[in-house]
Length: 110
Image (cartoon, rainbow, N blue to C red; front, side, top):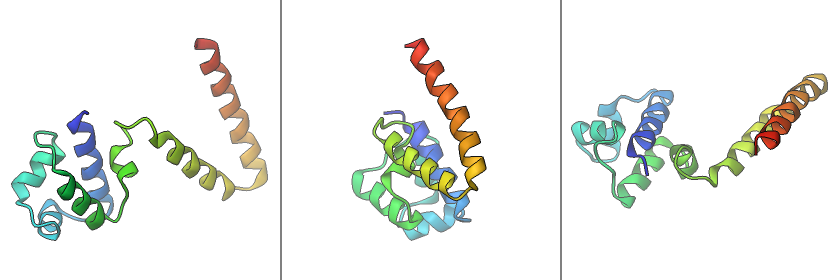
């Protein structure tokens, strides 16, 4: 597992939630220095610490492990479907044409 990628995800979600390292570290009872080490990939948190971080950030493991776990593509495709459903039908068709071209190209390269 690439701890740097997980750390970057934690940092990105933290920032998206408008939290500083200091605030998140207080929420999960970690030192700001240790949280910084997690975010830079120098340290890998224990599972219970990882769960505390997820709970504090109000996100699931897929959000933080998307770069290192292959199974997260299922969730990502669900997110794409949801976003697509919110668009007008004409935009949905246009985007689906683009996706189909990309799928065909990917199959050709296999």
